[in-house]
Image (cartoon, rainbow, N blue to C red; front, side, top):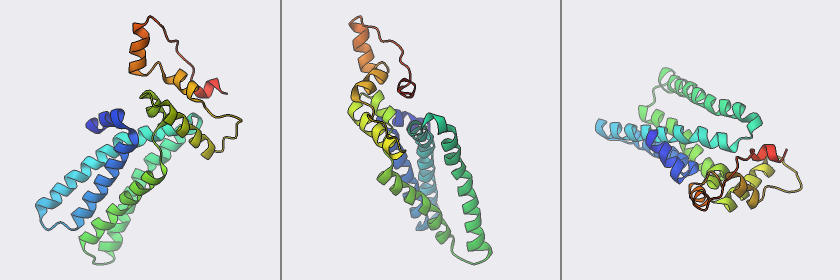
Length: 199
């Protein structure tokens, strides 16, 4: 989690989340076909690395994509799925082993399936965090993603965010721009959050 958290700050929340989901899913599926105990241990170790990447990136990405007024609710729902997953696994084990006599390989294969589905859905639907993009100077992409999210949430204002607004708000956070400004003797004032400015 510590290593993947730093990776997420450098290379993106979405790539980190996708890497964790697919690593966990592939490791789980491989576990169901493992011929020896040593390979099972290796697969489970890899699955744990995937979980670490998911934990380090999921909440960060969700919080940066959520509107501030409802952020706590969305994060609570997302965190609740960990508990729902535990209940699902317990019920699955009861059905496969308590009421029937299926192989443990079937259990492991089914248990890995939701992670694989989640990875495909994230790849197809979830964008990179606009905040991450802006903090790394990718203002055009950040503006486009932020406006797409606004439209998806039903925002019908006359104009969306502009690249200039995005640069004005996040430019002083950008390390390169801050260094240039400080070297030229310019000072950058602390800006209000975009949501407050446009309210």
